Length: 283
Ligand code: AMP
Ligand code: MN
Ligand code: MN
Ligand code: MN
Image 1: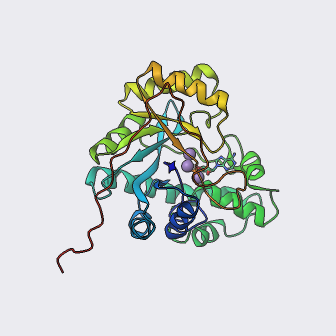
Image 2: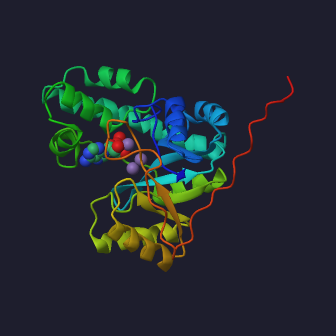
Image 3: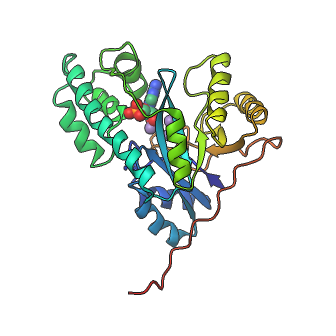
């Protein structure tokens, strides 16, 4: 079993990197990518635990990218997490996340959320602050019924807690991933609320910018969407990837490793085995 898209407490996941790896192992996953939002901070811990569980841990990140004034998510897989181009790029995105979090908190204060920034920081526990953290606070304070409702009422474009964010350009994000020796995957093509025409434009732009693969199967994709993505992949000679986008055991409808195999008419993305952890490194 393979899962190439998951989150931990290094961003908006609810499990620590070690707990995520242990859960993946118990569910029979043998190859797991940790892909937190705009960070690789969870990778060293995940790697150490993976070695104990016979899991090949793929170093990844889900990087936010700007395209046509919209935000896309590009999963980088098989990354050298010390590559300076990559780490430089991620550092800038993280700085943007910080100022954005402060702005979102200020906006949400006007609708009655107290100390949003401090509390978001606490719940992020040193990891990247995302809109999900604010969504959870809105639920705690009964300003929203659940995460979805919080996004719909407060956090989406046009809503009072929304703050436009300028992420790095799509082509630059793909370049960082390649500089770090990684593979660039367009995440959840049906997750952006685009029409079919916009989705096809997005895939074309991604291929044009040297992207490598499309995430065809996710924890929420339908068979019909998967066959459309397979068609998109074939049209542009892209590999097919699969990843659950697991965030939390509370998302009972989705779990690590629970994702279909990519359709047979597409070449599945193969990520080379990570360098083995050496147990006999010189002291
Ligand atoms: P950010 O990158 O900070 O804008 O946060 C994006 C994250 O928020 C996504 O990765 C999802 O985990 C979560 N998210 C976005 N939209 C929704 C939604 N409508 N309902 C629940 N979670 C969402
Ligand atoms: Mn997320
Ligand atoms: Mn995403
Ligand atoms: Mn994700």
